[in-house]
Length: 256
Image (tube, rainbow, N blue to C red):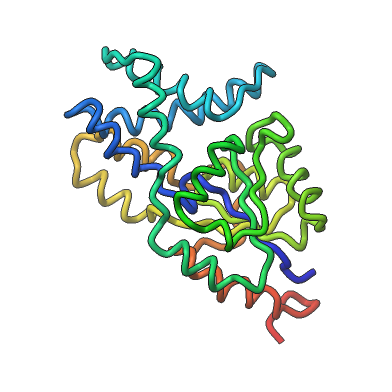
């Protein structure tokens, strides 16, 4: 079937999670980079732990809990009000530089976000970036109360859009999300924010692996779970030609 919709992950795909570093550094000078990396690692871990424990809480709760863990682990203190203020940086993440042009170039398709973010967080994030008019809808895991990569979430995307899975191209830079979407049966495009060869060179040159480099190694490479993206591209804008080429494929799977 031809691709009718592109569904984007939000955090790390359209929006740069590293952009919270300005807020964490301002709050705790000298600790910003470390806080940023541990916070994001623990944020994802808490979604998986809550899913396994069947104790769902929305992403705002997960985000503040993981920040609280990070600060306590580092011996840093914050009042509940200050904690919430820092966590608010996730509502104002920087849009990747090419994201708007990509969405505009894909205007002939139905465009949506499917994200772990709570509805309120995603509403603020999309509004801050000014991309609401480029999207048909924003879908949150909160609608079913289960985090990615649970297959029920990807099935929910199909229901919300009223499309078959073969009509959807899922786009993410997160390895766990790519594996989950592919295992479900979506066509998947991986945005390669950190190339494997470049990462190996960076690790070899560094000598000591700092928190940011550790994050790149753990969370910005493909997972080895047997489910791989259909294509790996360097920038969101490359999706314009890729989606068009998929829709030109003949029954044999080759270009006419």
